[in-house]
Image 1 (cartoon, rainbow, N blue to C red):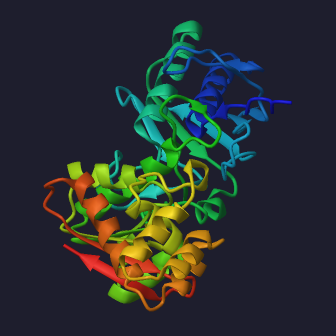
Image 2: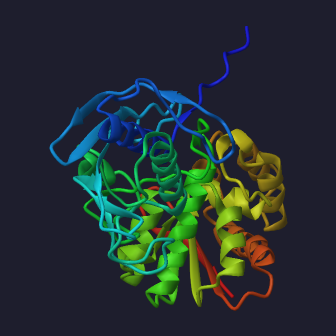
Amino acid sequence: MNAPPLRRGWTTGACAAAAARAAAEGFLTGQFPDPVTIRLPGGGTPAFALAECSRLPNAAMAAIVKDAGDDPDVTHGALIRVTLSIGPARSGVTFRAGPGVGTVTLPGLPIPPGEPAINPVPRRMITEALAEAAALFGGGPDWVAEVSIPGGEALAERTMNGRLGIRGGLSVLGTTGIVIPFSCAAWIDSIRRGIDVARATGLTHVAAATGRTSELAVQKLYGLPDGALLDMGDFVGGTLKYLRRHPVARVTLAGGLAKMTKLAQGRLDLHSKRGGVDGAALGALASRLGAGGALAERIAAANTTALAFDLAADLPLAATIAAEAHRVAQAVLEDAPIVLEVLLIDREGRVVAAHQS
C-alpha cells in the first residue's frame, strides 16, 4: 500500500499575516473573524483558526497556532501573535519584535541591522492584509504591528539564527506562505544567508561542514568564529553554486569519510536517499592504488565506508579521495576567486586527509 502524501503546512509569515488581518478587523469593528482568511503570494486563500484574540484599550491582539504539516519544523505548534495599534500619520506599517522574535544585528541579511527579523515577503503579506482590512472597515494605512512568538528565544537555539546575527528569538520567514514537508529550500536558504553575512562582515575564510563532528573539527583547526561556519549538511552542490556567484576568499569543505567519498564519486547531493557510496568503484580505486585482488574485494564489499578505509590503511586512499572530492568541487566553483580546501574527518573528529588548491 502506498503511503499517504505528506501534509503541507503554513509558514510563520503566513500565520503572522493571518493574525494581523484578524487583529485589524477586531480593532476596527470589535469583532474578530474566526477563521480568518488571507491571500498568499501565489494566490491561494487559506483560512486560519484563531487561538487567541482580544480588544485592548488602544490595540487589538490575535494569535494563530502554527501548523507546519508533516514537516519537522522547530516552530510547529508555536503561537504566532500579532498586537496591532495605530501608528503615526504617514508612517505606513511599522514592525516591532515582541518576545520571541529576533532582531537583526549583522549586515548581509534581507533586513538591515536593528530591524525585527521579519523577512520581506512576510512584511508584504502583513501589509497587504492590513490594507485589505482597512479598505473593508474604514481604517487608515498607518499601523504598528508587533509580532511575538512565546518561547521563541529557546526555539531559536535550534536554528541558524545565532550565527546569522539574529538575537533574541526566531525569524518570521516564508516566501510562498506554504511549508512543503522535508523541502530542501529552507536549509539551502540558511546556507545562502550564512554566506551573505560572512561576506558582509568581512570574513575571508568560511567552512562548510556536512555534520557537527566535522564542523567542530574544522573550527578547532582554524579557530574560526561561529559566523564562518556553514551548516552545509548534504547540500554541497547548492553551497558551491552560491559560492561561485558570491565568493569568499577561502573555503574549507569538511565532511565524514562516506560523505566526502560520495562527493569524490561525483555526487553533489550527499543524502543517503540519493544513493550510497559506490563500493565497487572504491574497491577499483584501491586496486589502482596497489591493493591486491583479495584486499580490493574486501574493500569493495565492506559494509561501511569507515571499514573500507580501515582496510586500506596502508594505501593512500584517503588522500586520493580528498583530491578527487576537491576536483569535483572545484569544477562547480569554476574560475571563482576562491582557494578551496577539502578535509576528510573521521568519527573521532580527526583530520585524516586534506587537499587544497
